[in-house]
Length: 458
Image 1: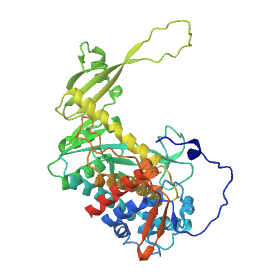
Image 2 (image 1 turned 90 degrees about the vertical axis):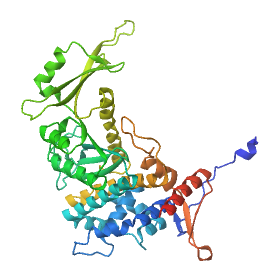
Image 3 (image 1 turned 60 degrees about the horizontal axis):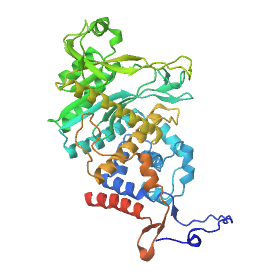
Image 4 (image 1 turned 135 degrees about the horizontal axis):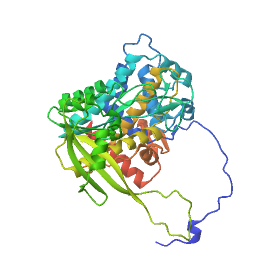
């Protein structure tokens, strides 16, 4: 239908008068989805159980404080002081089950009073939520990715240290080790470490524990693992092979003169695709106990020209080779081995989402347990966002060579803009609690789809 200009345009020169009243308005009407999710999994009670051992019992409770942190991060806020911007939001208070929200000073004191057992209990709760999803899916194959990520701070915080920090050199940092599930894009577990440790420092026990937890709920599934070159050692390789885990690990071949000689003296390389060629060998470093399958790959790439640019002179491009070595116990072909190993790059996307949209890289307090609790709240906010979508939508793909997530997940920031940050009004017409939002067909369709699915699954 064609509209006239008068029906489309209007004058908007006058600035409206601004008035502030208590109208039971909310800026986060989409939190009703998470209210349904939290009620379904009884999250508030489970969080409170994590702190039963503490003798001090504040009015708000440590479980409510951690739940507030999770909601704070779901809303997209970073600093603890930012809580003042939604202090009286009725949907936030309903989600927390409170009449009033604790202030920042109360929150800080509560975080400072937490201990290592509290952090351990929160880690256990996070693992149980992820494992419950895996048990319900009954997957035939589970892929674990292990890697560390740097969390920097510009001030002193307990447990931090100056170490490997390529972007902010010289700053103190934490360097936690993560285990993520490729099929669901969730963080199974995280082990906290100071920033001055090697990536594989103490990783043996952490990896073994993650494998054991998967075996307990899915005893017949195939477990796979992908790791970078920092984990290349006889200890880690032997552990994975003994646990019947199918693995690929990058090899720092520059440290091994025998491997370098194999590459330099190799005359015949087998074609892998248009850019890559390869050969295989059963090899082991001198001090290892047994041999493993090593896949050596070279990629033909164009070299960057770094000389002065002369626009009127043709400079022929130069090509060279980049080399990569992977150790594995998989029996599939080299092309699939390479695709599987390169799929571990999806873990970097998880880290990017955790830092940019769940604020995991923020270190709010000076106490170690408080900062670990904040980081676990960020991890749980990410995992709950994935769980919400897994409960409400069907898988979008089957198992791929790169082990891409089975769902086409929307990032937390996308879901926040589309559904969470919607204006609404809470009223009680005829005694019936009602949340009223503007008429938007897209928002109505998607929000009711999530809500109805959660209510049917309860």
